[in-house]
Image 1 (cartoon, helix red, strand yellow):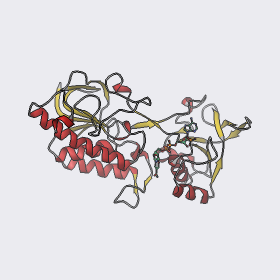
Image 2 (cartoon, helix red, strand yellow):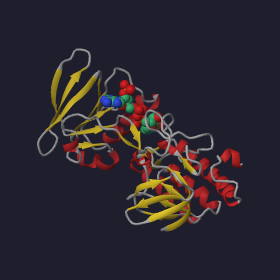
Image 3 (cartoon, helix red, strand yellow):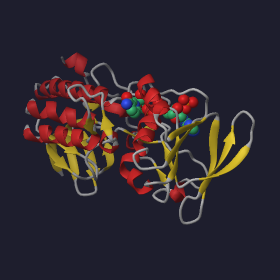
Image 4 (cartoon, protein in one colour):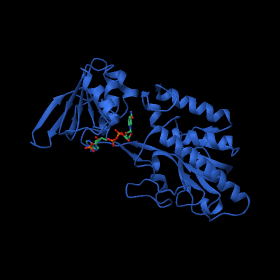
Length: 319
Ligand code: NAP
């Protein structure tokens, strides 16, 4: 059993920022990063709304955050947390593929994952024409016809990115007005490769070894059509990665972790940051802010633990 002061689970902007602050506060954090560094931002092409950068590639921003956290002493483990027991801590128990840990405090920054359409043909065509990441897979669609599903910022931003490769990008939205912000809408409307298909949902993704088309239905007329296409990129939102914590940490009806104003979960000593607890803002910068807050709260919590004021009290009571 490896004993740790603070374990941070997750390596997106929330986890990396928590690591930076915790390392600078001499909390000696261990960050369990998953198999690959970075959350959603690492598979985002261009980030134009992170203060201090006019424009930066998602993977580059992740690299910079990681290097900064490492410079102040964060240790990284490229492993996945498989099991936790937060019921009798501190210390809290965590198990990964490679190790068992005890930690005096934990920050959960496991983020969110792309939602699937849940239609026939989707699962079996992932990697064969169905994708949830334009940055990762756009290159494979040079001069091809692709569909993007969704009407939010992700659909438009990633749809615009896909125009670098694809010959035509049809954005298929279930309503007739977009949720995305005005700037992205204006850019998409001005792009000659982008077409919008309104009031339409996909019923199935068709093809044998790879995607050859889709079956689409107009939600008003009920008309069903089959369209040939080479790829489908799905951007219909995300769900929080909280499966590991069911039955141990309080969650809302959508399974986002519930935290208090100190970023503390229902278990004193276990904190959460980023999209795992944020159903509203979902920005790289807001996740980074939560990471900072969680690390500062952990510092207070661990000080109180050291002074035997805890366990069992909240950070507020300890501070
Ligand atoms: P989102 O804002 O939740 O949009 C999801 C879109 O998918 C909506 O248009 C929704 O339709 C549609 N949708 C949901 N379920 C569907 C289904 N089963 N079938 C078909 N369509 C479905 O998600 P997002 O675009 O990933 O954005 C998430 C957050 O990140 C937002 O806060 C966004 O502002 C932010 N973000 C910002 C940027 C940027 O600033 N450049 C870039 C990316 C993301 P309805 O509209 O009908 O609900």
